[in-house]
Length: 340
Image 1 (spheres, helix red, strand yellow):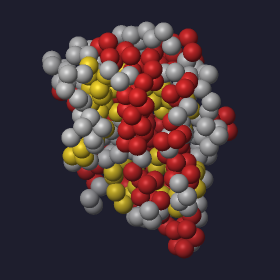
Image 2 (cartoon, rainbow, N blue to C red; image 1 turned 60 degrees about the vertical axis):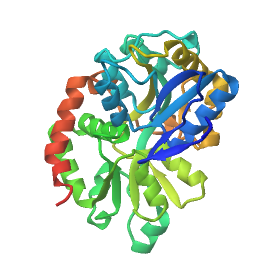
Image 3 (cartoon, rainbow, N blue to C red; image 1 turned 135 degrees about the horizontal axis):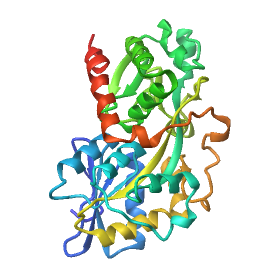
Image 4 (cartoon, one colour; image 1 turned 90 degrees about the vertical axis):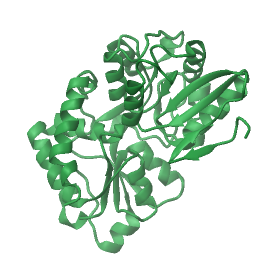
């Protein structure tokens, strides 16, 4: 098996390295197509470095890095929502690094770095919302939702999918967004009511809208750029933004403390922050806002200026204690009722 062979093991994609070459052990928390494209492009321009890549959701990536704390097997963690990256930084699991690309980054990307003590940095941004299958809605006579409150309508019973916040950064962002919008008790009351309309809590954050695109669900709660990707592929998906306001992500990147290949990690880190690399993302179906201010924003990307965004508190909801507290309550009050 050569180094470009892709092995699919239990849903995890591995790109094995060639013997004798310099290596980079990468966790990628974006869609697998994007992860594969990045690895391919990097190995074209850095033929002396072979990348071992594993694709994990944000929560899974954080858990793996934490479990390997005394003997890190990962060098670099790219993408996924910023909250678990901030948690990893607070736990001392990631290394301080100030990239020479820092002065080219948008303000929100730099702020992410500053908040973390330069142990992570923003690589893209996107707003939370949903994508619904207009054919299913028309066939079943379901009124398209405009607000978070509309998702509680009985007509949507069994039609909604969302990921599990323990494994998915998208779903954790949803949880944290609702808590900030409504207050914690009211948010959990809402989530318990919403549970009646949920057909499945998925592992991956983008999976719900992919299910809606295939006609397996009516609506997926996702980042809006993930819904846009399905529209671009030709599926009958309509992108929605809640009227009450919504949260957003700062997809992030972190070098692991004690990495076996720190120099290779820094090379990838600086490379992926360049405008040239960030501009290839739409070719892999990625329509987030790039963090390099010199990179062209994809024309299909949702315009954040037209979306009612909350003042998302990344520092609080990226903290280990707050995250642990919210996930424990979700497990007890929502996740435990999912089978009911």
